[in-house]
Image (cartoon, rainbow, N blue to C red):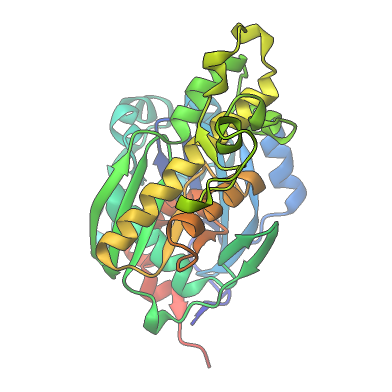
Length: 367
């Protein structure tokens, strides 16, 4: 299977779908002409909080584009949409299909929370699409149609995995947003949310902000690059005098207690480096998600675990920690797999819920 090549289109304007989460707003939009890179970058700079994904794709006579904003800066998002006239897309096939021409597809809790604001500022309604439906639909699209998309991260190296669409299901989709949802996917439109945890990206950002005074998620991630979690985390070696505890399979460098050293040391918060706090926090949350994910995969006999959501952000240490956790708990029998467009699953699913953008029209058989 491959993504459809650009074809002449009679549609005008851009087509837009949104995933408005508790922390971030994700946008997927298409245009019937390739948007110049410099124009996109200029728009990003003009609107604080926006980040464009450089990996766009040919689709339906145009290209798919990706962007994100912090939910707290929703007015910047509205300005971005208005400046590109993306909200005018509703006029394309809606009249012919008997739909309200002044609506755009949206998913996530913010589709309810900010519906009145979109109506007030842009004059459009939000046609709300179920969040879980969108996450699964977006993941299925990426895994079926976009190559390369899925990859493993081992020893600092990305290795892309060829996915056979005929042997994709079932799999576990772990979407790490503000919180974490774990979804067992059995096929197109066939899925069940089997577990989750409230300890996710919002936890990392919220606790990190309180402990380090960082102003953004990305600033917190950047701090972690230069951090040393061993300053704060209690390791097995700290308990056993530097020795392993191999009888139960624990090396001396295994974390025995996240933030555990803060108990025994006579230090205040200001005595710890923000870099070390950030690193320890990221390690704690990533380890926890990796462990719970594998246990749920084991519970349902699932061989594949795909991780998505903007918590990951292609961040090497995050992916490494999740991968190590899955490898450790599975005794090497399972691997964590990541998605190139990890953060846009919900927005892609909402985009595809337009009748003219269903997966059957986006994917064409390989010749």
